[in-house]
Amino acid sequence: MIQEQCADRNNVQTAEKPQVSYKVGIYGWRKRCLYCFVLLLMVLILVNLALTIWILKVMNFTMEGMGHLRITKTGLELNGDSEFLRPLYAKEIQSRPGSPLFLQSSKNVSISILDGKNKAVTQLVAGSSGIHACCKLLEVKSNTGKLLFSADAHEVVVGAEKLRVPGAEGAVFSNSVETPHVRSEPYKELRLESPTRSLYMEAPKGVQIMAEAGDIRATCRSEMRLESKDGEITLDARKIKFPRLPEGKASATGSRQTVFETGRWTWSPTSPQ
Image (cartoon, rainbow, N blue to C red; front, top):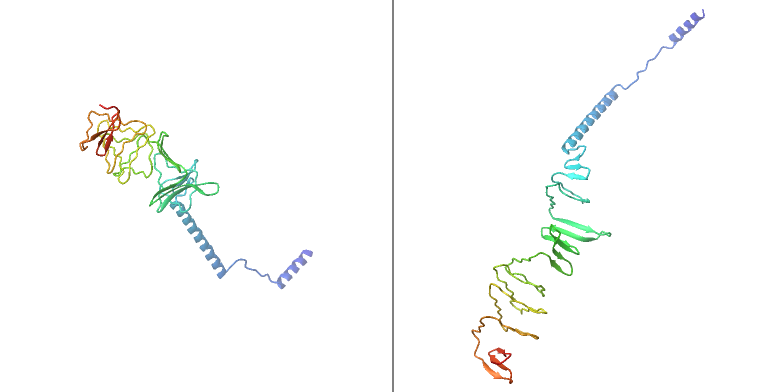
């Protein structure tokens, strides 16, 4: 009885209040806009993915590096030509074994060494006008470590066994030259010449001029003087010729010495004959 009454009440309530259904979701033009936005987003993702794969392929990206650049255990390795638009800082730059190292620039190549105050103490600039080096000491050594050339603010040292000057005018020295030995190449003459000034050869113990297979010639425009302050001048030869020497006259200046004067030549024998 009670169940029938409850059922009747439910039926009465249902008849009095009809049920209303609501649609859940996006419909109409909003739904179409959402689908278009999702489609556009998918297209952009695919385009970005394709561009990323293309860039990786073109730039040759690998697990070891990119392009000509490879990352190794010892550092970075570049294969082929490389261009640097900014300064390059490296502890060591070397080529592969058996391959040369090229440094190329449209203007110049500069190598600078800085001190603790960022001031250049040594600099090497190779440009179109030439090579300029600025340093305290410049040394050139052979493969065995022998000094070939050295230059500083005080002196220039040539450590090679032979100094060769192949120019037609020879070597020009504005000041004095100190050397223990001056010789020419084999089968070639040695010439010491001063076109406009005098030529002096001085040595504390003597000057020796020797030509084993040729002649010695001394020529001047004004006067030639052979002077010995403490010793003597010896002409030791099989023949001594004076082709243009005028006839001289003997004059007695003392009982033990006779002076002979001929033109501008004046000499006196050590013992009269």
